[in-house]
Length: 552
Ligand code: AMP
Image (cartoon, rainbow, N blue to C red; front, side, top):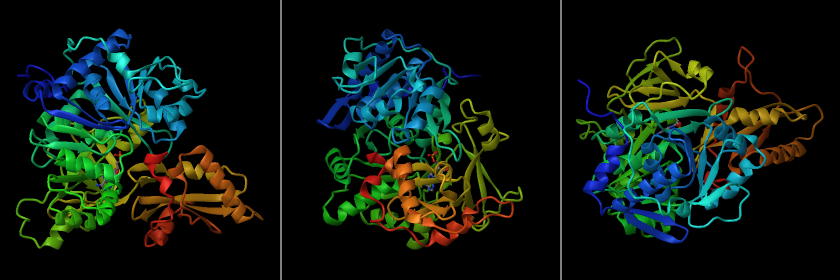
């Protein structure tokens, strides 16, 4: 017999509001710390829902955000999907061309934008017909700065005066609730839609003991941007558990994170390794009290073992997690399996440094080059395939991407993994031709195309090289045309990339070579270059400080 209602997001907020009306939601802003309770949060989400009705936003529209991590962004997390509309989180760190494509492809009706990101959005929207479908812009805050975007209003005026009650509709669990775009190897970003059912099941699995559980004694601070796969689902899980929320606001520095952890008593926080390397460096010279902190979630790129040891020494459990935009995003978490507590410490750290145990509710298989499933011996490797209730079944409007990335209901992750006897997944390589720098994707193919389009370039290729702070950075290999001066060419190419792409896409080095190595079929053989450069990790100092994805 079917249950009484579908699996939707609404009950999570309903419960938090009823059981924990006084629990706080805290946000760092340019003006200082803002705090209010679930009760006020709930009133404001109802006001937001009423405001969208009032503004004539269709009840099945896609509504976008272009924002950092703060309480008002969190208001859109429930305020938009629980009305039946779809919350589209746009990554503001993308090149303008990608943003234009995404806004057009998603057909966004309204965009909420942070004042500090207004200039970036204006730049992307400037003369771009892709923005023609956007009916309204709402700037977060209580006033509208000088802007070319129109029609425009500020967030507080938008919701002000609206009723704090809303007649929340009964929704089908198949209704799209969220959306993000993921940067593909080639071509345009691909849209991933999250239905209510996917977000509900992801939340419940996260709440299981082998996920990343959060309850009413927790203080949860997502540092992972809210424009990345719903901040790994933490705003939903924290609400489901009735936890206190802490949002670190725009571009938080390690010092800001340290203060929030100390002053708000953060018990669970999450982000990419680059963020925690920053905190570790800060702690070399500064006393930071981590006594409240129980769990640090590290994902998006591999957590270094030294990081696990560092936080163990400070009595904080580092939980290494792996996931993808297509998986809402959690796929595996590296808990120490029951029975392994007696292993020596080094072996335990080695296990915890792997990408972990598949989350309860998902299935996986690993297929080698010959199309066979690998042995679970920690040595064999192949491509990881996954399926489950919160794994998307297709890309938005992209049948050709569906054919490449899905097979009989399985998502082909593009991650090359081994599996040990205990079932721990370990990523050993990546089949997709993309570079992940500080948690953000750089398309090597797109950079290559840009370089190759230059008249003085005979051949060019771009690879990702390991980097201690950013995990990977791009390095370009260029074959100059006949009689071309390599130094002048490098200067021209730097100008070219600098004009078209955000600063952090700029390759750290341009290396002149005579020929790009080729495979037997004549394709660029990046593996040869990667092997050659794998041991030559780039060191700090080679990347300008302002190459941070957060700074562009
Ligand atoms: P995204 O869709 O942007 O979330 O990126 C997903 C991809 O990031 C995965 O397919 C992996 O290649 C990489 N990734 C995510 N988590 C980890 C991790 N813990 N270790 C290594 N790579 C990771």
